[in-house]
Image 1 (tube, rainbow, N blue to C red):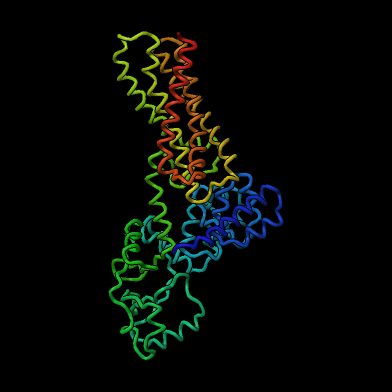
Image 2: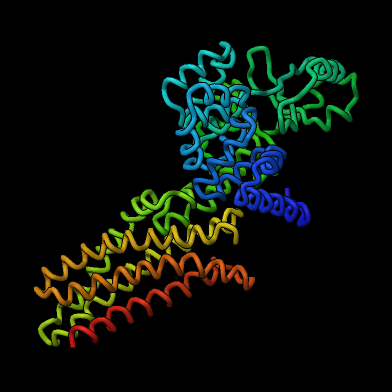
Length: 453
């Protein structure tokens, strides 16, 4: 469902007001605003805050909302908050969660807390949880919720309506009831609309839709998402090989799958994890990105080696030309990592003018740290290659300068393009490549001209 523009603007305005209140230390007003949000909005707020303010905002969240907020968070942000909670708080947060949400949360809880949560559940709920945990999380079985409403085909619509009135409430996003036989084998679906508008004296077998296909629990999440999109489904039955109804998948879980699918190619291309926290600490961010930088270094050195095959025909200073692809490529990949993370943060509403300053200095620190690490590696290789410390020192300085500049550009370019109403995903990469090439070549050749000529 598309959120109307005024509603979106109002929501963003509330989140901005909370960020301002936290920054100003107005905690009494901030706690009321935070707890007036939907759990998903609280999660979005937490993901858009630097670590210190995130911890402060989390302390203001009412304890009764902890579990609902945790399941809405990205894996990395959730793991960070769980690490700061004690066992009693974690057990309390797990109480009352839907089975599918609890299954996601349990995977990240300490073993002793998991045992305590299981002990606090009745046998029926433990059995339901075991059913979900038996399947990988990226399958229909892992996505499903076992909280379903089932009816028999040989009862009348009036009997079903009386049963629902006695029940009092339905699970969230219930658009249909599932028709099963006495052995819980799936027969079809009874849409709520037919239930409300049909003849009260007709039997369920006449009102149900037997053509609604169920989903096998081993079906990959991507295929589940395609079926929901193709058939405009709100929910779908999950049925095992024997025909027994296990549970249902609902559209809210499918939306999460679609979002992950959309983000995955973009982040993978930059060597980033699907749910990397945009406000993760400098060391953690640098450690995760350094592997991709190392892989890129190998390919860059290969290009330099090819040029170096003609070394015998060039003068000493021309060695800088051999090393130019290394400097440009290292800056390019570092900038791509940063710009990709910032663009995703902008798209999800996490990056705002209020936190841009923090991100600027964080990314500058990440770029400088990775620059020092890989500049040392390249300088050592350069010395071993050319046996001259002057050239090694020049390329060391050039890589540090270019990686730091690339990180800064990766933050500023998407923000400036956003301000100019230009799509950062469309134009950011082109501009970033230009900046890193110019800075890298200017640093390398400029320092070479100063110290080697």
